[in-house]
Amino acid sequence: MKLMTKRLLGVLSAASLMALAATTALAQQENRTIGVSIPAATHGWTGGVVYHAEQAAREIQAAFPHINVVVRTSPSATAQVSALEDLSASQSLDALVILPFTSEELTGPVERVKENGTFIAVVDRGLTDPEIQDLYVAGDNIAVGANTARWLAEKLGNEGQIVVLRGIPTVIDDERIQGFTEVIDDTNIEILDIQYANWNQDQAFTLMQDYLAKYPHIDAVWANDDDMLLGVLEAIKQSGRTEIQYALGGNGMKDVIELVQANDPMTPISTPYPPSMIKSAIYMTAAQFNGQAPMRGSFQLDAPLITPENADQFYFPDSPF
Image (cartoon, rainbow, N blue to C red; front, side):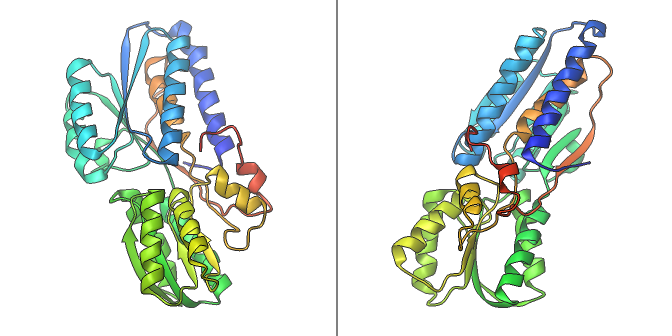
C-alpha cells in the first residue's frame, strides 16, 4: 500500500485514531503496553521522529487509558540494544514499535522480543530479516534515489562528475544508493567518490571539504539526506567554488523546502520522507487492541519530486523538521 504526502500520512494518523475511538465501546478493556524504541534526536529528521512519537503516546494514552505507551530513545545502536533489553525485561510488551538505529545490530534483539509473542511494527529502517515484522511503515527509498538521479541526469545532459554522501549502514541507505546508482550507471556521469557522513550535518560539512580538496571539478552533489545537504551547502559556500551546478538531498526538511519554494538554482528539488510516519505506526499498532482492526503488512510512502510548483503541499512551518 502506498501513501503520497505528509498531509496524507497525517490523515492516516487521524483516521486511525478515529477508528480506535469508534470501536472502544466494543473492545474488552484489557490493559495493554506498547513499547516504542527510537533513535534519539541526533539530527533533524530523528528530532522529528521523537516529537511525533511522544505526541502519539500522549494522545493515545489520553483517549484510551488502558493502553500504556512507553517511549525510549537511544543515541546509538548499542544503546538501543540495551534499551530494548531493559524495556522488554521491565514491561510485559504486547507490541513493540521500533525504528532501528541500524538494521543489522537490532535484528537479533527484536527477534528475541518477537519470540515472546509481541506484535512487531518496524518503521523506516528495516530489519535484515523482514519476516520478524508484523507491520512495516516506511518510504520508498529506492524511489528517493532513483527520482533524484533521473532529474539530475537530465539536467546534466547525462554527462559530468559528481560526489555522493551516504547516511549510516541501514537497509534504507542501501536502497537509496541502489536507486540512485542504478540510474546513474546508465549514463556517462562519473561518481567520483561515495562515503558515509552518518546523516549528520557537521560530518557532511567535513566530508564535503575533503571532496572539494580532492577533486578540482565537481558538477553536482547528492547528499542522500537534507541534514547532510545543509553541511554540504555550507562547505561549498565557504570554498568559493563556482562550477558546482546542483547540491541535492532528500527528506523534505522545511529549511530545504524553503529553498525549493524560492527556486534556488543549486537546490531546486527535494523528495518527501516525513518523520510523522512513526506516529502513524503507533496508531496502527494501537488499533490491534481496540476492536476488530488488525493491521498487517507493509505501508509505503511514494517519493514524488518536490518542485517549486508543488512545494507548498510539503511545507509545514510549525513542524520540528
